[in-house]
Length: 253
Ligand SMILES: C[S@@+](CC[C@H](N)C(=O)[O-])C[C@H]1O[C@@H](n2cnc3c(N)ncnc32)[C@H](O)[C@@H]1O
Image 1 (cartoon, rainbow, N blue to C red):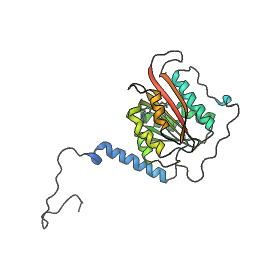
Image 2: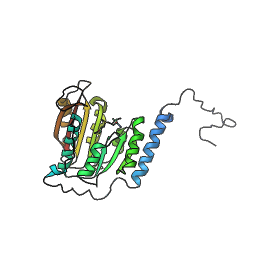
Image 3: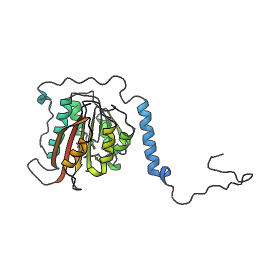
Image 4: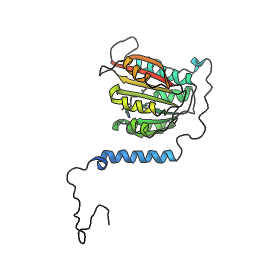
């Protein structure tokens, strides 16, 4: 007998009748989230998170400029990407990266092409209309990425210490929205020692980069590497556009 049917013949217990729209774990959205997380857990068990020895540092050529991608037509977003690229290259750490690559995976492809083919990615996208094209990019270019349809916070929740080499948290929203999950990632130390954590936020809500610097400084095991304000989608010498901030820290112990 199904467990939600309570016998009423011999027993005096009446069936529990629930009215109205199912809540919590029975809603369509939470069922989808649950299924996505279960699929993710199966993949993890199948070994997509590198286990055992930490990934050996990659040998980066001294004249690393030779390896610098062509960021031509430098909009401020490209300048910001180039900064993240440089920090990751100088860290000399390759391995698994948790990222928000959007559809084109520009930075991730640059890392693969110019630094090391050994990088691997967990790529998150919560936009319904963007997830499918991202999936197609990964498939058509055979990128070493596992896509996750949902919030990156889900993967931060289930991540363990030292799971990732780097985090590229290129949010398009505001600091206040994502503050808690960033704090969780830093507290749990899901990035290996020597790894880089970058965060990008909009300044729409009035948060300044100095506020985020203070927030990051509260986590003792990291060192501030970069704080850069820029305007999205405009050329480097144009100061209009969505005001953004990019900050980066490195795990030092
Ligand atoms: C700023 S864009 C990423 C740009 C990309 N890194 C680049 O260099 O071109 C952020 C992308 O991640 C998605 N996104 C933003 N916040 C997210 C979150 N918390 N969880 C999952 N996806 C998110 C957005 O829908 C968007 O496609």
